[in-house]
Image (cartoon, rainbow, N blue to C red; front, side, top):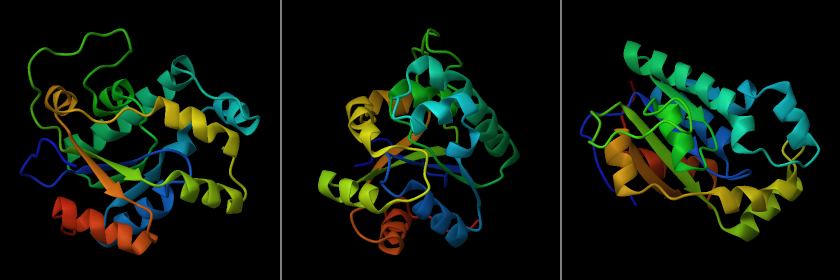
Length: 197
């Protein structure tokens, strides 16, 4: 459930969650409904990361840092220029979300001690039952992410806390994504009270 609301519609909507939860499909559909640009964070991984995941090797924090910093630049460009964007990105951990949102730039950087000004960013976590995730993975084709990596992502996932939202200056939501993509997008639009840009 959302914890800390900002009143203005976010400029950047990050559709987050583990592999096979529907981030790309739902993100594309949501972007179309809102007349926003859609970007898939998977397209910005280094070839080294893609090779690792293709072999079923889970990525570690050091593997992800350059990728997260690139996403931070993309998000900052859109928020500063008021260009609406929907970004599909796993964003599994609080520190990943903090880097994407520009709260910090590296893992060892200390977080602010006071709440940040609203950044115009919302993280929307797609929650899908384990059996449904496994079913989707079994039917997925032509994707570098191996089904064996699902558990490592579930282990890495950290819920968005109220403190994280306040310090980070962004909102966090959890949406049931067990239904089809269209129904899930309807639920996102209703929950966040979104309107076309």
